[in-house]
Length: 163
Image (tube, rainbow, N blue to C red):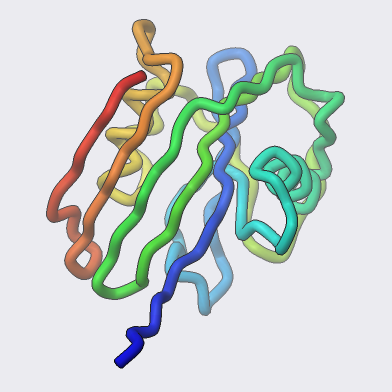
């Protein structure tokens, strides 16, 4: 008997500017991330590369274009496994801006600039804090693979590989 597989492929980008990181606080009622803070990103469309998806999602959620970013790096891959939400494969990017741009609004949530020193205090998935260490530490790796397994909304296990 064939088993149904619930898998999603997404991108996620954390954009920094002058010691602050851009987050979206999710406000859509049907979103599994309701009231949580996330980087920008979303689901890949058929035939999109991770880079194409990430650039499209940045524009849709903030109005920012690739040309406005002073740097952009593909930094990691996260495998999110949940008995409640299924499995998601996330391509993780890190971007930077020289100056704070004017941002457009979106229907998914509120855009917020947060001091990097305060990001661990935000309401986020527990595994995101592990990802923050991999993205923002002074001695951060060039690339990482992170598997986060959740039971309900609780992080049950993690596996980190550094490259």
